[in-house]
Length: 254
Ligand code: SAH
Image (cartoon, rainbow, N blue to C red; front, top):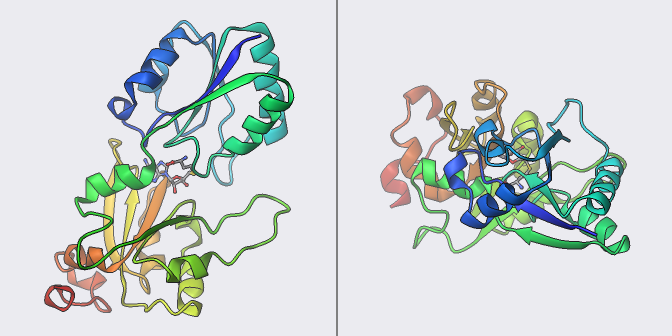
């Protein structure tokens, strides 16, 4: 019986992988990977059979129960099975379903942390998620729910934190604005869209909550995060004026 590693691939750039992840990839017999995982990362496992079980919103994806079954089957045939996931495997990655399925089959499983997109994006933007005096709390949330799952009160979580990081949200910017407004988040609150963080096509679009839909229309279809919070006021103070109508001035945030 083999072992399955749930490995975080980081936000994209291959050199944002952990040394542990690279070591395990080099030993892998099979690698099941997401669509978001870069070729350069996969090149660290040239000896392994590589299977795309990619999930991208709105595109072809492999049903979760089938991925679980593939992992179990592979672990019965191979010593080292890697399930490579974008960012950190324990955040919005359906890790628990895989851990449960493997545990049920009596297969050993170990998670290897990765740099989540929030951290890749924050590094690119160059603004601390918890800048002193402006933010003492961060929430990672997604408005997305799986098929058949009920909706949830994601905006309540957004209201409770100083800085908000929204995953899997950039394609529903209108709904995000409505949800945030209903939760009492002002439309003037600074926001930043970060697409392809750490990757060659990286884009940083500073805006405000009210103008998120407008900014989101400029995205090119890569993975993107929405960051919201007063910590970004200084960034939009430097942005082109058409994005600034609702934005607080730099000194208002100081
Ligand atoms: N486990 C991952 C998140 C998976 S959900 C992590 O920890 O990062 C997939 C979502 O992550 C995407 O819809 C997007 O919102 C975000 N994402 C992943 N990679 C990204 C990147 N390079 N730049 C911006 N956002 C990214």
